[in-house]
Image 1 (cartoon, rainbow, N blue to C red):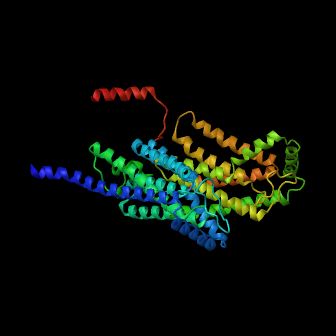
Image 2 (image 1 turned 30 degrees about the vertical axis):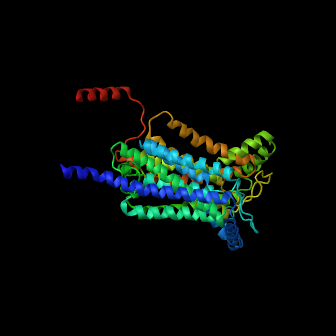
Image 3 (image 1 turned 90 degrees about the vertical axis):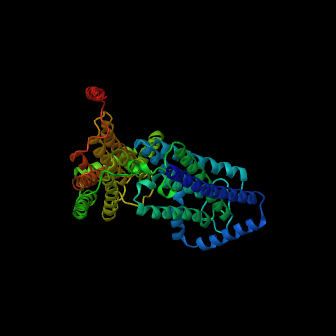
Length: 496
């Protein structure tokens, strides 16, 4: 009996030991943040002098090197609210799809807490941002604490704690180190770009550690109160959820023959590029007096004669649906949802290659064909690329066609036809807006169709994004079948 009691006490003892150590660390971070806050609030001279000296030093080191500034700005964006909100939102939706509401609530509470702490403390302290000799970046609002440093610490830390169980044990320590390096780099970029003092970033890290520690401790305490084991944080918040939250646990190999697939895609890319080059050169320089020449002359002029203020505004917004940012956003929302719902990497690979192939084919063909814009008013001004083919239209066709090819066979709900309608209406709308704005000829639209049809067709044959359906994986989203449901209920009743 004594031995049994001793065994029962061990989990409690381990939890207590880890809890005390964690509470000491969290309390220490909170106290250190409070002290730093006090020193900044009373404008302690030694701290102010050190902050200003380091700000000037970093400015002198970074300002003369424009490529370095570009890299720093790219890294600092990883700690910005748009990226962090997107990551947390996609993770929450994925967790809810995978039926992990506790982890989803944890991410929501932790993330919202970070969003509340940043502006409230900035308002409370009211510290102005650094003033340097050569400004290289700007940011709105006050300086203390750094919102990027705080947000990246909280968001990436919370995501790490949630998704650690989905990783193989050998990858967990590298993941922890990687997140730590990323958070450190985001904080350092805020100092190097001259938008925060060193103490702003240090305070953000301390506050982030304290808040993340409080929410993680509350989650672990909740597990303990419900009789669940409380493992070390290096195993994540909920280790038993590892299989459920893994991106694609049911898929062992993405492609059966990856080398041959790469070779086929490379050869196919060259053939598609050749077709684009041939058609582009013909309609651009050798189609005088033909139907194509008449179309390219009269349609842009027809649109130019019908410009109105309202239509110009509408065309600007619709044109934005096909620009790089919109297409990237659609991809970054759709691909994680595919993983969450269908647990397959092939559809994600299909969409990713669709976008990469479209971009490279567009840039290559636009460079070699080098077609001038239509000889009418170009409402978007000078563009860095030539007219043939239209990148906006090709990207719009590729993304919506790829999405439709994935979604349509995976559900029998009525709304799958919405994707078919969008795959038609969006490219037509973007094409109309681009021609209205005088940025493309009708044959540029045809070139975009040629690019999209050939490339997406090639990808579909090589990648086979719906191969799991052919192998027996049923659509994950089906219509309600009353007769089947009645049969299942009847069988369940007989089993009882």
